[in-house]
Length: 78
Image (cartoon, rainbow, N blue to C red; front, side, top):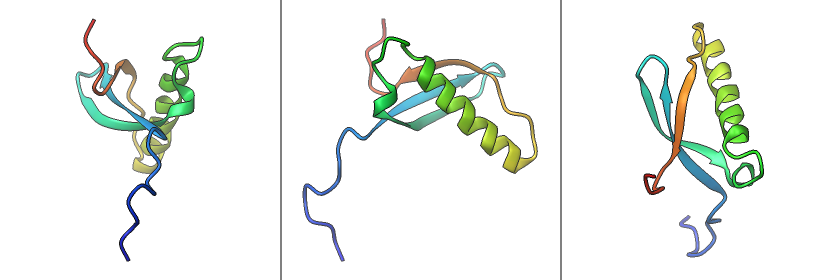
C-alpha cells in the first residue's frame, strides 16, 4: 500500500561523504541530524561514522579504515 504524501519525516538524517586515509571514499553516509550543529563541531559525526565502520569491518573480518575527512553532502565548499 502506498504511503500518504507528507508522512515521510524530513530532516531526520543528514548525509556525509567520508574520505579515508587510503584514498577511498564512501558517499551519502546517513547520520542522525541530532548529532549535527553542537559545540563539538564534526566530532560527534566522526565518532558515529567511526563506530559504524568498526562494526562493518568486524562483520567483514578486516580492520577498519581510518577517516581522513568528512564533508556534508550539498554543503558549499569553503
